[in-house]
Image 1 (cartoon, rainbow, N blue to C red):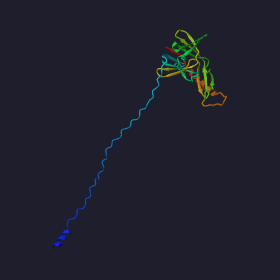
Image 2 (cartoon, rainbow, N blue to C red):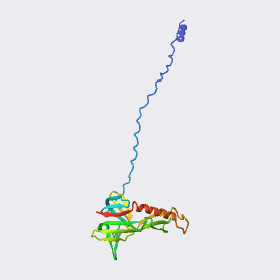
Image 3 (spheres, helix red, strand yellow):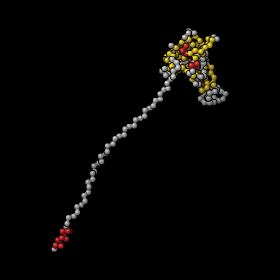
Image 4 (cartoon, helix red, strand yellow):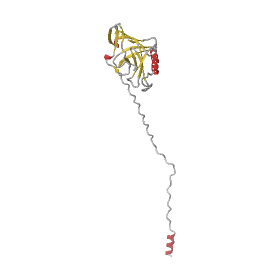
Amino acid sequence: MTTLLSFLLLACGGKDPQPTTPEVNTAPPVPEETTAPEPVPEPEEVVPEEPMIESNIELNVTLTMADGSTKKGKVIRVERNKKYNGLEEWIEKDSKLKVDLMRGKEYKSVALTEMTKITIKPEGKELNDSECNFESNYEPIMYFCKQPTTSKAFLSDGTSWQIDNLYKWKFYFEDKSEMEFWLSTHRVLEQEEFSGSIGENSVNNELISKLKQKMVDELSSSHIVRIDFE
């Protein structure tokens, strides 16, 4: 009897508890706070500095053009081209910056600082009465037209002289502008578009006609007819 009761108690004894399923968090994840990257600054544009103009003279001048317009300012540098056509290097040597003058059989060279006025008047009855030719030592060939001028220099001692100087000159102004001009015999130049444009031993009359018109335009507008030194 005791044995049977013990067996029944064992058979009906407490069962092991069922395992519990852990609760699952179904809430959406909270995004982590992120810091936006700082914008990369754009590199500053480097503006090249303009080269300083080395002064070699100080002249207060008034330029009068053929159309009546004027330019007044302070010239701080003067240069003269190595060749008459103005296409070679510019010279700044003092001895080369003197203007050749003639009066009868007298000749001398004077600096611009010794002058009070220069006048430059084209010669010829017609503005297109210019002589044209070409320089074959340039490649392509360089064509040019030139118009003689009656050019006079009035000096501070009260005398006036004929200018005998065919070189091209350049004024650098304090306001950083520049002007190129001839004191005697105005010129216009242009190269052919390419070598042999019209064939060997031929003259490019079309280009000459273009240069003659350019001469007319300049002699009636931008050509300097007078320089007053103050």
